[in-house]
Length: 379
Image (cartoon, rainbow, N blue to C red; front, side, top):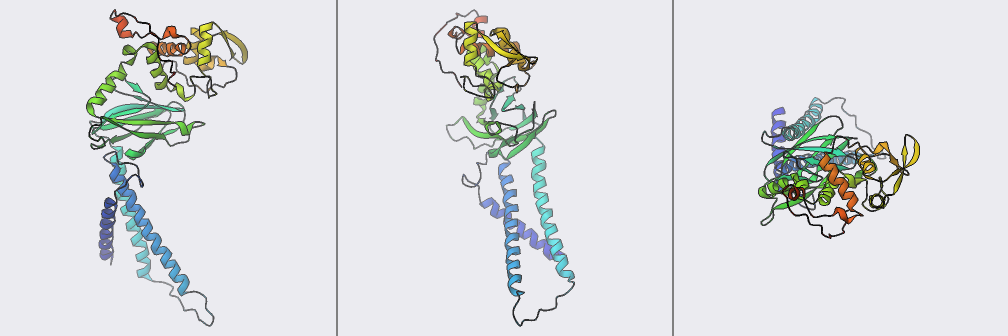
């Protein structure tokens, strides 16, 4: 009997898998299958879904039949029921056990595969914090968005500097918690074929799926899948943006990379942290800022020293009207990164900081050109 049951289950499994593969998920069912493991993940899901749907129909139909058959009827004498049936009990024990075993096996295969990154996977370091992502590449490039080459495995090694987060890329079918004080990993391979003819880049959404505070729903960024040459060019340009961009432009990029925009608006609109335009105006005009230091309120000069301390250690002097929610940046920013970030903030109100020269031009003796630039704040 068990032999017949096993054979029937094997046949059912093959049929359901074939049906799952024929039902290719499209834009109205699932997101794009943009990784090499996405189709397998969808097939496991669809297999379990249709199996559960079949079980649901059988159970509901059986329940309905028995309710009708054994309903109370006037003048009808209830039949004596059997107290024990070995065949029935073995059947309803063995079949579900085998089905759960099959579901466990196909799920475990996919899970183990997603946990074992290929040896040649391209490594990217991920740092999460309220409420942004930072991706660091082997050549030193940093970005608030994830950039990956097409057709090559990518391994993410992730940690958080504050609370629990979770990285999720629907198109790749990968999700992993990002935990403070430890490292977690995941890998994926953006499959060949996601780039259409003439494209050198395509983008997908990346979410945080673990509630992490007030602006959790805004902790969204993009994954950019590049053609090989496009990715190499992007990585080279991004790694050297401080050298090759005007200081205030490099500072704007550093502002985004460091996640400052998660809390600080460039204008003085209300946010978790103070707006930056008014501070820039105070620095230009030699004003002062009301702050709380050690529980006591006082005014301090709005100058470079105040700006530097506010970036590196915001808890030292908290602007009146705000609470300190800013992470410690002391030791996380190099002097070059801090320098261009300060220049960008000061340039919001002072065009003297908007010279078009770059560090590369200065070091090479190039001519410094001070030009008037677009006043777009790049918010």
